[in-house]
Image (cartoon, rainbow, N blue to C red; front, side, top):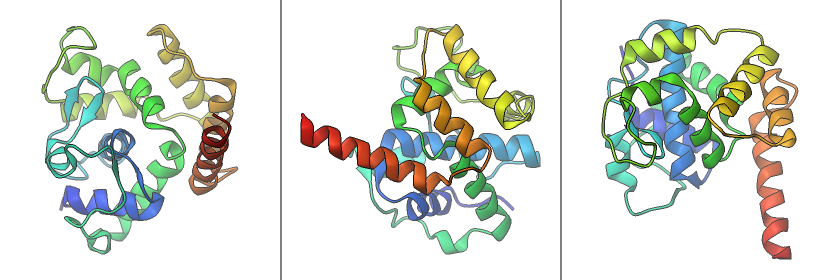
Length: 201
């Protein structure tokens, strides 16, 4: 039985803490997309739409509109998720959780489900077109490969679309993909760097 999307959202915030809504929406999207690819079924029943900044679940957006970050999700309860769903979301967070909202947005823009759902309109044009579940299932199923292959494919796809990832970002991708470091450690490093940057600016 599919989970409640608000419970999924609450679990993500509980695991990673406060984050920008930009990043939050992409992590929910990847949780859905990879559940379709790995389990052949939806994690939650809500539609994902191909907005300008990447995939968005409108039901979540309606709860955080006019906010730039979320630190809790009272509409959901992470304890209601089934153990298998928690394990799946943990895997998604270990894979994608160290990336910023901007990095995740660039990744989704370089991947077929978002682009095809928008039907070729310019990237900066508004759209609420649905991203088809079968499209997500087929696309991400083909990405089931070794961690190094997955990182290389993601970076290569991004470059084809004119996006670049720093060497540091690619190193973090590989470390998390191989399980060398946890998503929590990677996030802590990013936050520490941002604090140092803010102090020096």
